[in-house]
Length: 580
Image (cartoon, rainbow, N blue to C red; front, top):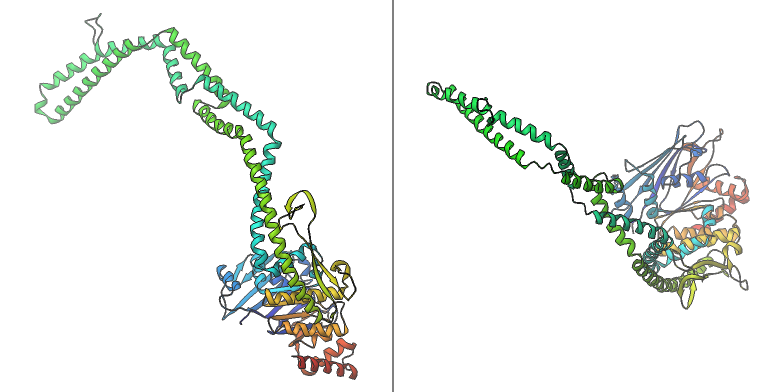
C-alpha cells in the first residue's frame, strides 16, 4: 500500500538552527544529538508545517523570520491530495511542497503546493498525514476527556454512529430547554408586552383608520376652510373667460378669441401658415369654453358647510392621536397594527407553546437516555478489546505483567437522564466518564494512570496506545519526541524494537537520547552545533557505518572512542539488524 512519506524538511533561522536540512527515510528515522543541540527543533518545525501555533520567540535572534519547508510524497487520490487540490495547490510529480514562515513580529504565512493558504488548512491536512507525540501529549493522556476520546477513536463506527445521533439530540434538547426557560422566566415581561399591544390594537380598531385617509382629510379641510375665497375666485375667472350676464357690454376672453378666429377664417385659404394659426386659435376657443364650464361646475359644487368642516377636523384629531403613538402617518399606524397583531398571537400562544416545548423536552430526555445507554454499551465492548490490545503491546515493551483496563462510570444527577433505571449526569459526549487504569504487576490493584504510572510506564502506555491505533486507524507518519523518557535498559530495547515494527506499516520519526532505541532505526540523523552555538546545513547529517557507531558510543558512555562502548554499540546494531 502506498502511503504518504515526509521526505525532507529545510529549517532556517528557527531557534538554534541557522540553516539545516533534515532528510528522512520511509521507515524508522532516529534523531539524536547532545542535549541542547536542537533535536526538539525538528519536532517544532514539523508542528509549524502542520499548522501549529506560531511564536515570535522561535525566530533566531537577529533574523527577520523563521522558515520551515517540507516535501511530502503523497499518493494520488488520498484525502490530503484532494483537500490540497481544492485549495488550488499543485503537486510536483506526486510531491506536495509545504512551507511556513514566522516573522520576528509573530506574523505567520503558509504556502501549500505554491499557493498561499490559511494556516488552518495545514492543520486539516495534519489529521490525515502525521501523528505527533511529545511530553505534552503524555500529560494530555492523563486527562479523562482525552482517554474517552482515545477509546471512541479506537471503537470507530461502533461509537461514532450512536455518538453522532446522540449529539444531534443533545443539541436539540439544549435549544428546546433554552427556549422554554426564556418563555417561563420572562412570563411577567411578556404579559406586560401583551397588555400594551392589546391596548394599542383596541385603540386603533376603535378609530378604524383607512389607508390614505389622513391625506384625503387634510385636502378636504384645506378646501372647506377657504370655501368663500375659492368660490369668489372661480366666479371671477369664469366671468373673464365666458362673460358676465350682468354686464352684456363687457369683453371676455371667449369673445375676443372667437373674433380673432373669424377675422382669420376669411383669408386662411390664401396661406397655409395662417390656416394653421387659425386652427390653433379654434383649439384655444374650445379649451376656454371647457375651462369656463368646469369653473361654473366647481363653484356650484363647492360645499361651504361649517358642520362638515367640524366633522373633518374631529376625524383628523382622532387620526392624529394614533399617529402620535404608532407611526408618522396612517399607513405606518396600520403597519404597526399588523405587526403587533402577529406578535400578540405569538405571546398569547405561550401557554400552548410551553406545553409543546415541555413535551418535546421530556421526549428528548427519554431519547437521550436510550441513546446514551447504546453509546455506553458500545464503549464497554470496545474498551475490552482496546484494553486487551494495549496490554498485549505492553508485554512487548518490557511490561509483561502489566494489565490495562477501563473504568466506565456514570454520576448520579437528579437533573440528568435515565439510563438503566438510574438518573445520571449527561453532556455533549454522553453520560460516561472513561478512565484508563493500569496494574503494573500482578497483585497490584488497577489505578488511574495519572496516579499509578511512572514517567517511563506512561511513555510505554502511550506508545502502546499509538501502536494499537496504527492497526485500526493509521496515519502515514508518526513523530515521537523523547517518548522513551524515563526508560532504560531492556525496556528501551523493547521500545526500539516496537518502533521498528511500527515502521513497517508507517513512517516513524523519533527524537531520542537512548542508543537502544536509535540502534533500531533504518536511518539515524545527528544534530550538532558549530562552535558559535548554531546548527548549520552541515549540522544535521545522516550517520552511516563508523560515524553511527561513534554516535551510539557517545550515547552509551559519553565517549566516542571507548572500546567498550564501541563494542556495545556494534552489538546493539547487530541485534537490531537480526530482529529486522
